Image 1 (tube, one colour):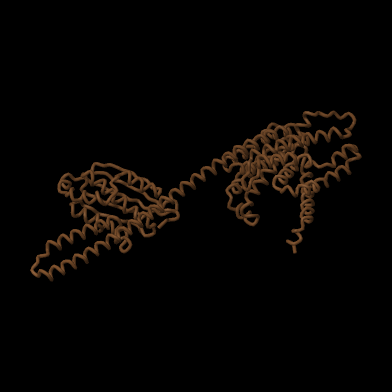
Image 2 (cartoon, rainbow, N blue to C red):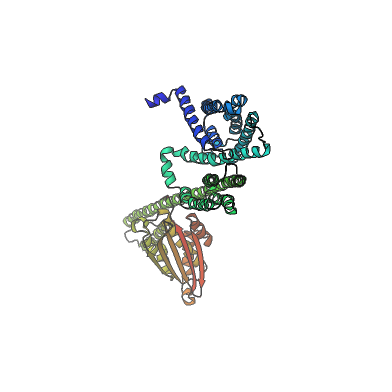
Length: 532
């Protein structure tokens, strides 16, 4: 039933007119000539409301001014009363329409602070001219001298400061609710650092300044200094949270300056309001720039994360292709073995006295080479026995032992929680470090240590490869056979390959030298959303 009634366009226009008219009355009662928060309400509503509801808004605002003309016609004159019937929105609507069409101050969830401030200045100027016209049409008391310059300044700064007090805060709230709606506003406010810092830090500072100012005499230097100091929280919040911080601080600061006003037309308060208005405007612009830079930095971080994720997925896909190639080679090895057995069987049938030991030896060598090649492409025992076993007892460990290089591997902490791509990268890095060390022919003892660690709540691994040099042991190593195998099974790019592999997983490479040799340390981080 409620939705059916609200679907009636006439009912919607009447409800908007009545609601806005009541808000105009309330805000007008709280406004003074140099703190016209009604101007802030008016600009906020006309910036966010669709054009089709503007006539209803003007009707709602005109209700208050019709009543005001009726009540004050006997005091200010009939001419003023007739002219006052036309609400200020009638003069300001063309200005706001032009700004909305050309500069789009509110576009989806993006607020153009520069356009909002430009619109505020234009609206304040038009409001000042309209108010001066109303004053000229008034029947002024005898002997009253009108100071046009002072009055114009008071009307302009009042309208502008009123807009700065209300409009940015309304736009900030609109930006928060445009995505999740009003239902999520409380949750977002509870989790907002801006709300927390404004409540726990900004408000106590302003309350202290307000207490100091209220305790001082009306026209003392202390009160003047306190009124000027009201803009300091605005600067702090703007630097911390962009234009939204300047909005919250500016609203509270302007209210505090108004609360310290000793008289209705106090020149010192007006000067303080001018300074606060200047500070709010400057911090809104600076905060908008800061927010733009923050969005750009966040976009760059998102692009970097996407690039990392893409590279990590490519690593995973490459390892899967290597695994398929390794399985294919294993199948070829088994086929070679079966085919050779069939051939030998036929030869024994034709020549029973045939000595086939040489053939069998060549076949075993070929099968062993195929097995090592398959194992270098992808360790066949990785999934069955795990990475620590492969590093301790795999093909590389056996080859080093056969060549005469002392080798050991110590794994501390569990590596199973790491993604498959990281575990394979650990294996590749260890292989590349060993290959680079052996290519220099200056290593006799290799000690590998792997620690499972966490950093900032993310899993990772620290790889330390200690390379020791013993001239006596180096002379006993079979370098030719070892290097021939290493050249076929590793990238051969040395430290560059290690750095590239570590960089893909947001890691780093460090090299330390000592009298006994050198140590290469590599740290890797598990992807946030692993590809394997």
